[in-house]
Image 1 (cartoon, one colour):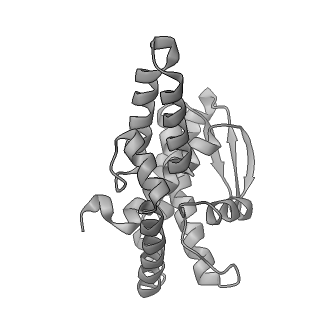
Image 2 (cartoon, helix red, strand yellow):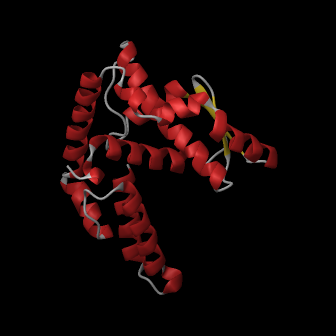
Image 3 (cartoon, one colour):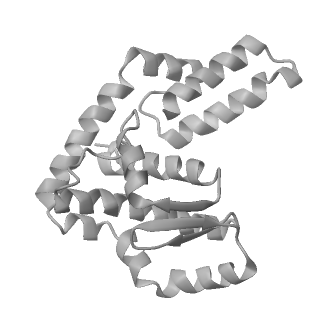
Length: 203
């Protein structure tokens, strides 16, 4: 299987892009339980199904979320976007300050929690067989959605392949918006179709 089609790669890439987009829209505090509930209800799926009463399953989706959060923390610090403070069961997005950047630089070198969650081996070491089953179930549901008529039509509108990453689709959407924007002589109905297609794809 190509790396781009590896279930864990697709899951993390889509989850990271979704979190990056939605958390950047507003500063504030987020509870992990609320975010996991939102992610579990998303279509296409962003995290595998899990039983909140099953401690192992809960840990696995928790790990996937925090893996992406620590990746986002580094990404935002690198680009001076925002400061993401990550706690045990909640996290907060605040405007970045000079002192935050200094603290962030120190964290990248010394934070043991960041190092733990960025290492996917710590996910698989919990129970590799169960993790693989969880990913297989996620991949099946993800593939079913990506092969639905609505999703394929949306991809055709954006002129991208359904199996392309969310990042690729997003970049294509932005290019088409710039190309067909009415202020640049584009057609209103065309830009509406492009926006509708992106709404379907990003869910």
